[in-house]
Image (tube, rainbow, N blue to C red):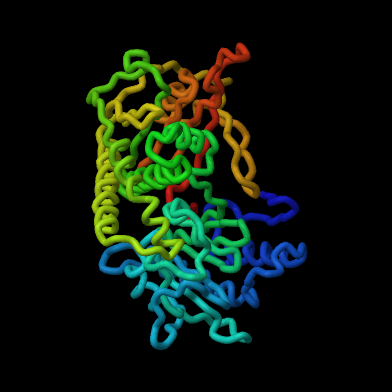
Length: 429
């Protein structure tokens, strides 16, 4: 099927039949397209298709290996002029599968990455120069940006190519605004949860009016936490559902909640974490000194926030949904959606916006989905402003969003958009 990214065209292989050479091919066509359009004159490009293959193939082979029974996960930057090199090897290491598997545990983090460079100007071979961690210490050359970008992991520079190993058989390459992934024989453009505009609206609404401090930073922090919660559920491979309910009384929700709660654990830990954020921003990006006690506080508060997100992820292991309201209060878990009606053959689910070159799929009949997805759809359809996150046991994420907060505004029925094939990895943010 041909897919377009503006004027870019490429014939993708059928799902289940893609190999690393297909990923290399589409990336090379994309690089040539940008060069022809003179869209990236100041951007580093691999000198040849062979050099691009030298970047992708060892990463893919490493993804199929384990290190002490742990899946190999890492991220690597390819550049001819790497910056913010935190640790440099005494002698460069060969960029090959063996070395990647050995050093992957040192960069199994959303912050750290391997720095890769061409062996020479006229060589297709690559070497590992060192390790980068932009949060390790302030840099006089680092851009003076707020720390919320650090929290979202926005370290990919426009002059670099990035390859990320996200799991067995899953390799993602990103450059020039074009992330593309090979996962289980399928080439796709990954779509992080945070790119759904209705989810971003929820982040901003939940942190509005300074409830947690600076709204820009707190909304980004909430996004990072929510991505981490979904990621934990995906990695557990047990599935789970999270329902975000509009500001109604619990009695007014179409739910039967087995374990009722009235918890502000997420709000309280986010608020505590925000108390030290401005100081950390000055330390990391303005190079200003900071008292040791503030760093100690930040470490403890971040640990508390991580434990809160661990708790929310664990609640989803109980049969039923975890329910929060749009103000981040945890209402309960083990919830059953009481709205259920036999789907008709003419009832369809519409897909929300998806980035080119995948495009927006055609609507699917509701009958094509299982009970969990149909229930989440009916829940969102009944409540303006509702959002449902459904994680299946194979770690696939589907999000349903009610697109209208006030369905009576124009007299029409509230609409629901579905987003599937989503990914929680923070590296993609």
